[in-house]
Length: 186
Image (cartoon, rainbow, N blue to C red):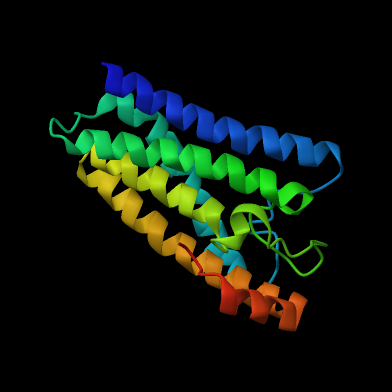
């Protein structure tokens, strides 16, 4: 029962961070969720990503209520992954300040953030999402959770690559230099 409570608590904290950050930015007039808003060919991918993250989020909240727990020592690894994901996500969105968005488009005005946690990873918020998905798949190992984790890893990687192209076109040599110094993930 404790594992279920801890997993549910971690998922709740993760998405509360997401929600609160989004609301704080919206109060400042910043559109946070840009997924699927652009009329270019990436729009369909971003709509799929938006649906997957919505379904994945619901699945993450339901997992502690519906699925059997891994009864091995790996459950502790899973809990470590999800709480590391929560902590990393908090640090990442805090470091991004007013520049944090879900998605990207040509009209958004942002600054290139290369300080704080972004000195060690170009995409710590995505790493945090990956840790959350993987940790839950380890704790509740079933076909749905494993498939959601694999799909999330693939879709987030594609989103990152799209964002990198946007950042390269926006920040040019500054981003190229940043890419050469800091890894995409860890």
